[in-house]
Length: 272
Image (tube, rainbow, N blue to C red):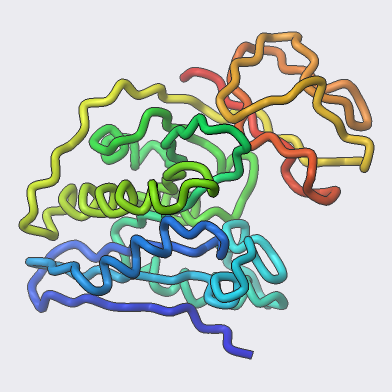
């Protein structure tokens, strides 16, 4: 079984930062994959090293989220790997150990036409995020769910940022945003000559407050929620084993009742 990610290394031969750009951690999130395809053909750097990584090739080929395990929960050092995505993460963590920063490009499920570009990062990545076309930034997800690529970098004192470019339904629309975001990332570390405008957008900084994993097949939301719908303290969000409500005002993220038991049904963040 091929357990190797597709890794393209661009080495300028000159001193500078070493960074990585991931796409296809989830194989059906095509905007990041198309971004990488473009960068492999067109990127020129003036210093440093850039790794361009198609992270989960089997899932990309099959156009599925993952084959055996969510790769973005596998970036954890372990004694023994058993699943395909764990072997990939072992390989990718060796790359990340060489890097000063990571940009991980994603997309998300949403049945509406309301596209929101947002990011997950640690405290180390907030300045970088402020110079990207990102309207919402969520911190501290690693406190609730270990194994994300951004959390791995943050736990090692580096910058890791996972950018959700937009919905899975609008891949071509967000390819261009993926390219722009990548160039903004590279410009931040002075790796390219291009001058890419840093967008002056109003940014909401949020902090993770709760994560709910589906406990029963009877899990059901009380109404249709979309990512970043506002939820008031005490509002009943869903029924699972118990009634689920929050103790503070905040915002629901990634609501889904279609996944198996044990998978995240929603995240909840509050304003920081």
